[in-house]
Image 1 (tube, rainbow, N blue to C red):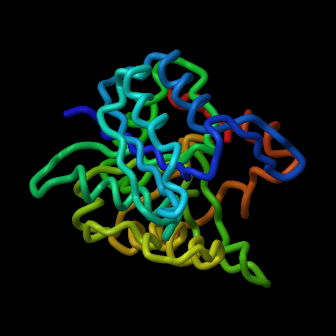
Image 2 (image 1 turned 60 degrees about the vertical axis):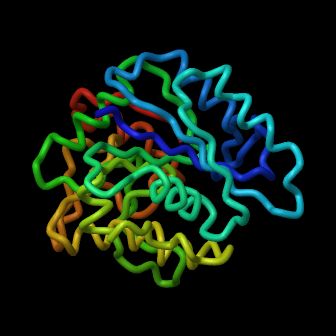
Amino acid sequence: MSTLIVIADWNGYPLTRMKRLGKNVFECGLQPLLNNIKKYKSGCDFEVVLSINFDRNESLGLDHYSSLMDEYEFISNVLFKEDNIGMDLGAYNFALNKCIGKGTVRDILLMNTSVRGPYEDGWLLNHKSLFYSDDKVGLCGISINSHNTCVEPNVFMPHVQSFFLYFNTFVFTNVFRSEIPGSKVNLNKVQLIEEGEIEISRLVLESGLKIVSSNFPRFLYKKDADWSIPEKDIRFTRKYGKFANKIPKLSVKKWFF
């Protein structure tokens, strides 16, 4: 069965926007993301479901999301959630509980519209291959963080960052109990990170499974193992680019974020 890709967005965002990450400012948004998905071959079958959070008091202007189905044939559905509770995690959870029926067996990719890319053919197959590169992998992403950087001093809490999460229905049903952690948190970003993004990986690790990222595809982390890649959020480190290029690559191509 094809991979289900859920793309989360907030109606308050324009289809194309600029975002700052550290000192870098870059273009992102739903439209550039869809354009790149259309431009580059995925390498395996997929369908896209858009999950749009919106303020029920500002529900005008939603028609343009549905019209995207005419422009991008891989979009199978557009779902609207009448609040922003849980933010991206809430949108992910809303879509999965609409789309994943009892007994469904398929791969799942969750991503938000701050993701840039893909920029090369085979982008989806490469992450699928990484997820299945070891029978104990439970979660695959682009970027992996060693610590909870929301508290001082930072605490070691390894986690895949939630703007891009690849897993399958076994993990969703048996590890997450059909509920994405953090999906009920009400607009508190620190709480979302701790009870959502970090909790997602914690549950995977506590279940005996591993986490992995395409930035360091040979580093498959399991609970209580040694941490042998750079610590904390390496996206903000000046030397990250040079360091990452020294890591032996599998077949996984690089995304940008």
